[in-house]
Length: 95
Image 1 (cartoon, rainbow, N blue to C red):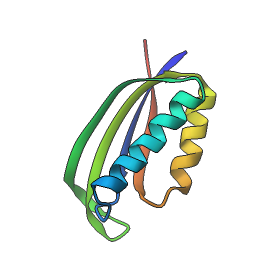
Image 2 (cartoon, helix red, strand yellow):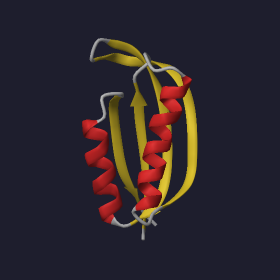
Image 3 (cartoon, rainbow, N blue to C red):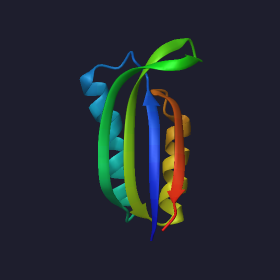
Image 4 (cartoon, one colour):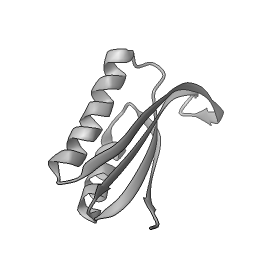
């Protein structure tokens, strides 16, 4: 199993329920494919360094998890098609 880190920026138009729904969707996806969420940090609403999709703010979420490459690929696929995700990056952490 590899260790991965995902930083995603969610739309500032989401309310608390929408943010929780998106975060739980991602964590459920990780655990359903045999992964394990080791850390989940909701960093809150922050100002973006530059405008993205006409947004100047976003809700930052950091998720660290362990799993195979298929878990990271499926998470990448789901984040690409989720409208509430402004930007995201999945990194494999070295040992």
